[in-house]
Length: 404
Image 1 (tube, one colour):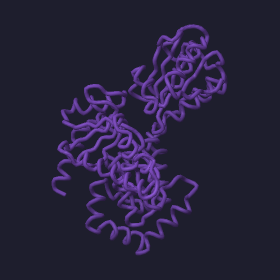
Image 2: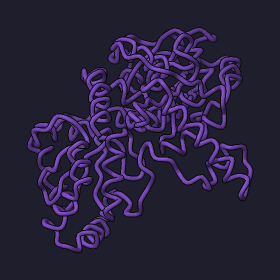
Image 3: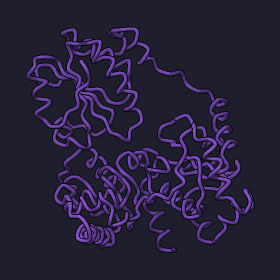
Image 4: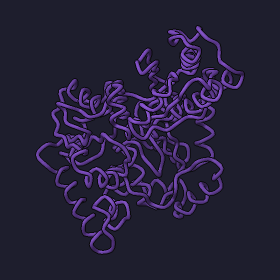
Protein backbone atom coordinates (compact mmCIF):
# COMPACT_ATOMS: atom_id res chain seq x y z
CA UNK A 1 0.00 0.00 0.00
CA UNK A 2 1.26 3.56 -0.64
CA UNK A 3 2.80 5.86 1.94
CA UNK A 4 0.19 7.69 3.97
CA UNK A 5 0.66 11.26 5.17
CA UNK A 6 -0.25 11.88 8.81
CA UNK A 7 -2.23 15.04 9.47
CA UNK A 8 -3.27 14.39 13.08
CA UNK A 9 -2.65 11.91 15.90
CA UNK A 10 -5.98 10.31 14.93
CA UNK A 11 -4.37 9.13 11.66
CA UNK A 12 -1.78 7.19 13.66
CA UNK A 13 -4.46 5.75 15.93
CA UNK A 14 -6.45 4.60 12.89
CA UNK A 15 -3.41 2.85 11.41
CA UNK A 16 -2.69 1.12 14.71
CA UNK A 17 -6.36 0.16 14.99
CA UNK A 18 -6.18 -1.62 11.63
CA UNK A 19 -4.14 -4.34 13.30
CA UNK A 20 -1.14 -3.91 11.00
CA UNK A 21 2.33 -3.17 12.30
CA UNK A 22 3.21 0.48 11.64
CA UNK A 23 6.32 2.39 10.58
CA UNK A 24 6.20 6.09 11.41
CA UNK A 25 8.61 8.08 9.25
CA UNK A 26 9.40 11.57 10.55
CA UNK A 27 10.71 13.95 7.89
CA UNK A 28 11.24 17.63 7.11
CA UNK A 29 11.16 19.53 3.83
CA UNK A 30 14.59 21.08 4.40
CA UNK A 31 16.36 17.75 5.02
CA UNK A 32 18.01 16.43 1.86
CA UNK A 33 18.47 12.81 3.12
CA UNK A 34 14.71 12.61 3.65
CA UNK A 35 14.19 12.80 -0.11
CA UNK A 36 16.11 9.56 -0.62
CA UNK A 37 14.43 7.85 2.34
CA UNK A 38 11.05 8.77 0.83
CA UNK A 39 11.90 6.58 -2.16
CA UNK A 40 13.21 3.74 -0.01
CA UNK A 41 10.18 3.64 2.28
CA UNK A 42 7.83 4.05 -0.68
CA UNK A 43 9.30 0.93 -2.26
CA UNK A 44 9.03 -0.96 1.02
CA UNK A 45 5.40 0.10 1.40
CA UNK A 46 4.66 -1.33 -2.05
CA UNK A 47 6.55 -4.57 -1.37
CA UNK A 48 5.18 -5.16 2.15
CA UNK A 49 1.37 -4.85 1.98
CA UNK A 50 1.05 -6.12 5.54
CA UNK A 51 2.85 -3.03 6.84
CA UNK A 52 1.36 0.44 7.31
CA UNK A 53 3.95 3.10 6.41
CA UNK A 54 3.08 6.61 7.59
CA UNK A 55 4.90 9.89 6.85
CA UNK A 56 4.88 12.53 9.60
CA UNK A 57 6.13 16.03 8.81
CA UNK A 58 7.98 16.52 12.08
CA UNK A 59 7.71 20.30 12.34
CA UNK A 60 4.05 20.41 11.34
CA UNK A 61 2.34 17.56 13.20
CA UNK A 62 3.70 18.70 16.56
CA UNK A 63 1.69 16.46 18.86
CA UNK A 64 2.81 13.24 17.13
CA UNK A 65 6.44 14.40 17.00
CA UNK A 66 6.33 15.23 20.70
CA UNK A 67 4.50 12.01 21.59
CA UNK A 68 7.29 9.86 20.13
CA UNK A 69 10.11 12.08 21.41
CA UNK A 70 11.51 12.82 17.95
CA UNK A 71 14.34 15.37 17.84
CA UNK A 72 15.91 14.75 14.44
CA UNK A 73 15.04 13.70 10.89
CA UNK A 74 14.93 11.33 9.16
CA UNK A 75 13.67 9.21 12.07
CA UNK A 76 11.68 5.99 12.12
CA UNK A 77 9.50 4.51 14.87
CA UNK A 78 8.32 0.90 14.55
CA UNK A 79 5.01 0.01 16.23
CA UNK A 80 3.46 -3.37 16.95
CA UNK A 81 -0.02 -3.43 18.54
CA UNK A 82 0.47 0.26 19.24
CA UNK A 83 3.68 -0.23 21.24
CA UNK A 84 7.10 1.06 20.19
CA UNK A 85 9.35 -1.95 19.50
CA UNK A 86 12.25 -0.22 17.76
CA UNK A 87 13.60 3.11 16.56
CA UNK A 88 15.98 4.10 13.78
CA UNK A 89 17.73 7.46 13.45
CA UNK A 90 19.24 8.79 10.25
CA UNK A 91 19.33 7.79 6.58
CA UNK A 92 20.27 4.10 6.74
CA UNK A 93 18.42 2.30 3.91
CA UNK A 94 19.76 -1.23 4.65
CA UNK A 95 18.81 -0.98 8.32
CA UNK A 96 15.36 0.40 7.46
CA UNK A 97 14.79 -2.43 4.99
CA UNK A 98 15.83 -5.07 7.52
CA UNK A 99 13.75 -3.69 10.36
CA UNK A 100 10.64 -3.03 8.27
CA UNK A 101 10.81 -6.49 6.65
CA UNK A 102 11.17 -8.25 10.00
CA UNK A 103 8.27 -6.26 11.46
CA UNK A 104 6.03 -7.01 8.47
CA UNK A 105 6.77 -10.73 8.76
CA UNK A 106 5.49 -10.87 12.32
CA UNK A 107 8.65 -10.55 14.35
CA UNK A 108 10.17 -7.56 16.04
CA UNK A 109 12.49 -5.54 13.84
CA UNK A 110 15.97 -6.86 13.38
CA UNK A 111 18.74 -5.03 15.19
CA UNK A 112 21.23 -5.22 12.32
CA UNK A 113 20.93 -4.46 8.67
CA UNK A 114 22.07 -7.98 7.77
CA UNK A 115 19.19 -9.71 9.55
CA UNK A 116 16.89 -9.57 6.57
CA UNK A 117 17.29 -9.19 2.85
CA UNK A 118 15.56 -6.53 0.81
CA UNK A 119 12.06 -7.71 -0.17
CA UNK A 120 12.62 -7.08 -3.86
CA UNK A 121 15.30 -6.24 -6.41
CA UNK A 122 13.84 -2.76 -6.77
CA UNK A 123 14.08 -2.15 -3.03
CA UNK A 124 17.62 -3.50 -3.03
CA UNK A 125 18.57 -1.09 -5.79
CA UNK A 126 16.94 1.78 -3.92
CA UNK A 127 18.72 0.92 -0.69
CA UNK A 128 22.18 0.23 -2.08
CA UNK A 129 24.52 2.87 -0.64
CA UNK A 130 26.62 4.83 -3.08
CA UNK A 131 30.36 4.37 -2.86
CA UNK A 132 32.47 7.24 -1.57
CA UNK A 133 33.61 9.78 -4.14
CA UNK A 134 37.39 10.19 -4.26
CA UNK A 135 39.07 13.56 -3.81
CA UNK A 136 40.06 13.90 -7.46
CA UNK A 137 36.45 13.46 -8.57
CA UNK A 138 35.18 16.01 -6.03
CA UNK A 139 37.86 18.53 -7.03
CA UNK A 140 36.92 17.91 -10.66
CA UNK A 141 33.28 18.76 -9.96
CA UNK A 142 34.31 21.91 -8.11
CA UNK A 143 36.59 22.96 -10.98
CA UNK A 144 33.77 22.36 -13.45
CA UNK A 145 31.46 24.67 -11.51
CA UNK A 146 34.08 27.40 -11.21
CA UNK A 147 35.01 27.24 -14.88
CA UNK A 148 31.44 27.28 -16.19
CA UNK A 149 29.95 30.15 -14.18
CA UNK A 150 31.71 33.47 -13.58
CA UNK A 151 30.09 33.95 -10.16
CA UNK A 152 29.58 30.91 -7.92
CA UNK A 153 28.33 30.93 -4.34
CA UNK A 154 28.78 27.80 -2.24
CA UNK A 155 26.17 28.29 0.45
CA UNK A 156 23.65 26.69 2.75
CA UNK A 157 20.41 26.52 0.80
CA UNK A 158 19.80 28.22 -2.52
CA UNK A 159 19.66 31.73 -3.89
CA UNK A 160 15.88 31.56 -3.61
CA UNK A 161 15.90 30.10 -0.08
CA UNK A 162 19.09 30.61 1.95
CA UNK A 163 19.39 28.21 4.86
CA UNK A 164 21.50 30.41 7.13
CA UNK A 165 21.69 34.12 7.83
CA UNK A 166 25.28 34.43 6.58
CA UNK A 167 24.38 32.90 3.22
CA UNK A 168 21.34 35.17 3.02
CA UNK A 169 23.46 38.27 3.53
CA UNK A 170 25.83 37.37 0.69
CA UNK A 171 22.88 36.60 -1.59
CA UNK A 172 21.39 40.00 -0.77
CA UNK A 173 24.72 41.77 -1.46
CA UNK A 174 25.00 40.15 -4.89
CA UNK A 175 21.38 40.86 -5.75
CA UNK A 176 21.77 44.50 -4.75
CA UNK A 177 24.48 44.77 -7.43
CA UNK A 178 22.24 42.99 -9.97
CA UNK A 179 24.60 40.00 -10.17
CA UNK A 180 23.24 36.63 -11.27
CA UNK A 181 25.13 33.66 -9.88
CA UNK A 182 25.31 29.92 -9.66
CA UNK A 183 24.40 28.75 -6.16
CA UNK A 184 25.58 25.38 -4.85
CA UNK A 185 23.80 24.00 -1.78
CA UNK A 186 26.50 22.38 0.33
CA UNK A 187 23.83 20.93 2.65
CA UNK A 188 22.72 18.63 -0.17
CA UNK A 189 26.21 17.51 -1.24
CA UNK A 190 28.42 16.33 1.61
CA UNK A 191 31.30 15.49 -0.72
CA UNK A 192 31.51 19.06 -2.05
CA UNK A 193 30.88 20.46 1.42
CA UNK A 194 33.95 18.73 2.84
CA UNK A 195 36.06 18.77 -0.31
CA UNK A 196 35.75 22.50 -0.92
CA UNK A 197 37.26 23.28 2.49
CA UNK A 198 40.46 21.56 1.34
CA UNK A 199 40.21 22.90 -2.23
CA UNK A 200 39.99 26.50 -1.05
CA UNK A 201 41.80 26.20 2.31
CA UNK A 202 38.81 28.08 3.73
CA UNK A 203 36.98 26.34 6.60
CA UNK A 204 33.54 27.95 6.66
CA UNK A 205 30.54 28.75 4.47
CA UNK A 206 29.35 30.60 2.45
CA UNK A 207 32.25 30.93 -0.03
CA UNK A 208 32.02 33.33 -2.96
CA UNK A 209 34.07 32.87 -6.14
CA UNK A 210 34.45 35.28 -9.06
CA UNK A 211 36.08 33.94 -12.25
CA UNK A 212 37.31 30.89 -10.34
CA UNK A 213 39.03 32.86 -7.58
CA UNK A 214 37.93 32.80 -3.94
CA UNK A 215 36.70 36.18 -2.71
CA UNK A 216 35.91 35.07 0.83
CA UNK A 217 33.10 34.43 3.26
CA UNK A 218 30.29 36.55 4.63
CA UNK A 219 32.33 39.10 6.55
CA UNK A 220 34.73 39.79 3.68
CA UNK A 221 31.94 40.06 1.11
CA UNK A 222 29.89 42.41 3.31
CA UNK A 223 32.91 44.64 3.98
CA UNK A 224 33.70 44.77 0.25
CA UNK A 225 30.08 45.49 -0.63
CA UNK A 226 29.95 48.37 1.86
CA UNK A 227 33.20 49.92 0.61
CA UNK A 228 32.40 49.51 -3.10
CA UNK A 229 35.26 47.02 -3.57
CA UNK A 230 32.91 44.19 -4.54
CA UNK A 231 31.48 46.13 -7.48
CA UNK A 232 35.00 47.17 -8.48
CA UNK A 233 36.21 43.55 -8.36
CA UNK A 234 33.27 42.38 -10.48
CA UNK A 235 33.98 45.08 -13.04
CA UNK A 236 37.68 44.21 -13.08
CA UNK A 237 37.08 40.49 -13.56
CA UNK A 238 34.05 40.63 -15.88
CA UNK A 239 34.00 44.11 -17.37
CA UNK A 240 31.79 47.10 -16.57
CA UNK A 241 28.71 45.27 -17.86
CA UNK A 242 29.17 42.49 -15.29
CA UNK A 243 25.46 42.25 -14.48
CA UNK A 244 24.58 41.36 -18.09
CA UNK A 245 27.58 39.00 -18.35
CA UNK A 246 26.57 37.09 -15.22
CA UNK A 247 22.94 36.93 -16.32
CA UNK A 248 23.91 35.51 -19.70
CA UNK A 249 26.10 32.88 -18.04
CA UNK A 250 23.32 31.76 -15.73
CA UNK A 251 20.86 31.66 -18.63
CA UNK A 252 23.25 29.60 -20.74
CA UNK A 253 23.69 27.12 -17.90
CA UNK A 254 20.00 26.90 -17.06
CA UNK A 255 20.04 23.13 -17.38
CA UNK A 256 21.78 23.15 -14.01
CA UNK A 257 19.99 24.67 -10.99
CA UNK A 258 21.04 28.28 -10.62
CA UNK A 259 19.91 31.20 -8.56
CA UNK A 260 17.23 33.53 -9.80
CA UNK A 261 18.53 36.89 -10.93
CA UNK A 262 15.47 38.66 -9.56
CA UNK A 263 16.07 39.90 -6.00
CA UNK A 264 14.53 37.87 -3.21
CA UNK A 265 14.23 38.88 0.46
CA UNK A 266 17.44 38.21 2.34
CA UNK A 267 17.34 36.09 5.46
CA UNK A 268 16.32 38.40 8.27
CA UNK A 269 14.93 41.10 5.98
CA UNK A 270 11.24 42.00 6.26
CA UNK A 271 8.99 41.15 3.35
CA UNK A 272 6.67 43.78 1.90
CA UNK A 273 3.74 44.37 4.20
CA UNK A 274 1.32 44.07 1.31
CA UNK A 275 2.24 40.45 0.51
CA UNK A 276 -0.61 37.99 0.63
CA UNK A 277 1.17 35.76 3.15
CA UNK A 278 1.73 38.67 5.50
CA UNK A 279 -1.88 39.69 5.13
CA UNK A 280 -2.95 36.16 5.96
CA UNK A 281 -0.68 36.15 8.99
CA UNK A 282 -2.29 39.34 10.18
CA UNK A 283 -5.70 37.77 10.10
CA UNK A 284 -6.56 37.51 6.44
CA UNK A 285 -7.73 41.08 5.96
CA UNK A 286 -7.43 42.40 2.43
CA UNK A 287 -6.66 45.76 0.85
CA UNK A 288 -5.35 48.66 2.91
CA UNK A 289 -6.61 47.13 6.14
CA UNK A 290 -4.70 43.92 5.47
CA UNK A 291 -1.51 45.81 4.64
CA UNK A 292 -1.83 47.87 7.83
CA UNK A 293 -2.41 44.77 9.94
CA UNK A 294 0.55 43.02 8.33
CA UNK A 295 2.68 46.08 8.99
CA UNK A 296 1.64 45.97 12.64
CA UNK A 297 2.80 42.35 12.87
CA UNK A 298 6.14 43.27 11.32
CA UNK A 299 6.52 46.09 13.86
CA UNK A 300 5.84 43.64 16.71
CA UNK A 301 8.48 41.28 15.35
CA UNK A 302 11.02 44.11 15.09
CA UNK A 303 10.24 45.11 18.68
CA UNK A 304 10.82 41.53 19.87
CA UNK A 305 14.13 41.36 18.01
CA UNK A 306 15.33 44.71 19.36
CA UNK A 307 14.32 43.96 22.95
CA UNK A 308 16.61 43.66 25.97
CA UNK A 309 17.69 40.09 25.11
CA UNK A 310 20.22 40.22 22.24
CA UNK A 311 19.81 36.48 21.57
CA UNK A 312 16.21 35.52 20.77
CA UNK A 313 14.78 32.08 20.08
CA UNK A 314 11.38 31.84 18.43
CA UNK A 315 10.31 28.35 19.41
CA UNK A 316 7.40 26.06 20.20
CA UNK A 317 6.82 26.27 23.92
CA UNK A 318 9.31 27.70 26.41
CA UNK A 319 12.87 26.80 27.41
CA UNK A 320 11.44 25.19 30.56
CA UNK A 321 8.82 23.23 28.59
CA UNK A 322 9.65 22.93 24.86
CA UNK A 323 6.72 21.76 22.74
CA UNK A 324 8.75 20.05 20.03
CA UNK A 325 11.98 18.11 19.92
CA UNK A 326 13.65 20.55 17.54
CA UNK A 327 13.05 23.47 19.89
CA UNK A 328 14.32 21.39 22.80
CA UNK A 329 17.55 20.55 20.97
CA UNK A 330 18.30 24.22 20.27
CA UNK A 331 17.53 25.16 23.87
CA UNK A 332 19.90 22.46 25.12
CA UNK A 333 22.60 23.53 22.66
CA UNK A 334 22.44 27.17 23.78
CA UNK A 335 22.40 26.19 27.45
CA UNK A 336 25.40 23.88 26.95
CA UNK A 337 27.33 26.84 25.48
CA UNK A 338 26.29 29.10 28.34
CA UNK A 339 24.46 31.47 25.99
CA UNK A 340 21.77 33.56 27.67
CA UNK A 341 18.73 34.06 25.48
CA UNK A 342 15.17 35.22 25.41
CA UNK A 343 12.38 33.22 23.86
CA UNK A 344 8.99 33.66 22.26
CA UNK A 345 6.39 30.89 22.06
CA UNK A 346 5.09 31.01 18.49
CA UNK A 347 2.28 28.60 19.45
CA UNK A 348 0.81 31.40 21.58
CA UNK A 349 0.58 33.93 18.74
CA UNK A 350 -0.51 32.80 15.27
CA UNK A 351 0.06 36.23 13.72
CA UNK A 352 3.71 36.27 14.78
CA UNK A 353 4.08 32.58 13.88
CA UNK A 354 3.06 33.25 10.28
CA UNK A 355 4.46 36.76 9.99
CA UNK A 356 7.95 35.78 11.10
CA UNK A 357 8.20 33.26 8.25
CA UNK A 358 7.61 36.15 5.86
CA UNK A 359 9.93 38.49 7.75
CA UNK A 360 12.86 36.08 7.77
CA UNK A 361 12.18 34.17 4.54
CA UNK A 362 12.60 31.04 6.70
CA UNK A 363 9.73 28.53 6.65
CA UNK A 364 10.17 26.51 9.86
CA UNK A 365 10.69 26.76 13.61
CA UNK A 366 12.65 27.20 15.80
CA UNK A 367 14.47 30.31 14.55
CA UNK A 368 17.50 31.73 16.37
CA UNK A 369 18.50 35.42 16.12
CA UNK A 370 21.42 37.46 17.42
CA UNK A 371 20.62 41.17 17.64
CA UNK A 372 17.97 40.83 14.98
CA UNK A 373 20.11 38.79 12.56
CA UNK A 374 18.92 35.30 11.69
CA UNK A 375 21.37 32.53 12.55
CA UNK A 376 19.16 29.64 11.40
CA UNK A 377 17.00 26.78 12.54
CA UNK A 378 17.61 23.54 14.39
CA UNK A 379 19.72 21.92 11.67
CA UNK A 380 22.05 24.92 11.37
CA UNK A 381 22.41 25.34 15.15
CA UNK A 382 23.15 21.66 15.69
CA UNK A 383 25.74 21.64 12.87
CA UNK A 384 27.43 24.66 14.42
CA UNK A 385 27.41 22.99 17.85
CA UNK A 386 28.85 19.74 16.46
CA UNK A 387 31.62 21.72 14.75
CA UNK A 388 32.37 23.65 17.94
CA UNK A 389 31.32 26.90 16.25
CA UNK A 390 28.08 27.84 18.05
CA UNK A 391 29.45 29.80 20.99
CA UNK A 392 32.18 31.47 18.94
CA UNK A 393 29.73 32.43 16.19
CA UNK A 394 27.38 34.11 18.66
CA UNK A 395 30.32 36.00 20.18
CA UNK A 396 31.61 36.98 16.73
CA UNK A 397 28.19 38.34 15.80
CA UNK A 398 28.12 40.40 18.99
CA UNK A 399 31.55 41.85 18.20
CA UNK A 400 30.79 42.50 14.54
CA UNK A 401 27.61 44.37 15.39
CA UNK A 402 29.35 46.34 18.16
CA UNK A 403 31.97 47.70 15.75
CA UNK A 404 29.64 48.11 12.75
